Image (cartoon, rainbow, N blue to C red; front, side, top):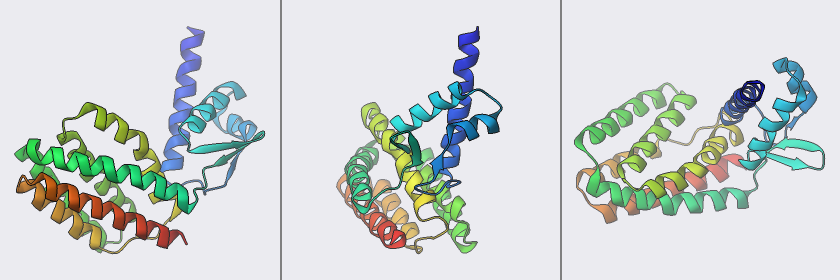
Length: 214
């Protein structure tokens, strides 16, 4: 029972810290101190240490000697992450064009409209959240479980880059148009077109991210 309680506490602390990282509550390069976190959570250092270890494995934190810092990506890191994302999500779009259901197409239409509204309000968090949902629906519609699993491995890093690295900065409204073009290709059941537009969309996303970061 004691082991179960300890494991549950580890998981809870991990989830809280991960949420903070993905939502941009920490800045890249910030140092996280085990003792201070333990005091904040009202627990011993053990559960905090285990949670930090997992976040290091997730590559959202980096250990330098005895110090633990929030991942501070270089331009090269961004390119590496997005190159992998490009290939996987363009394949997902190609597969989804043949398998996507009408209900999923309607969900994508709704997301595009909601994104337009969020953009007009300059609600960055909502725009990012809707964009993630848009891509998740297409990924799920691909029907390829291995592809879904592999893509999910880098999704947290992409979210981290969007919310933490560029903070409040927003790309222009072109992603909304690009999402509309992807949706049109999916409606046409044109896999090659969907893959091409998705590839271009993520390339533009990367270039904008690097520009905003600089």
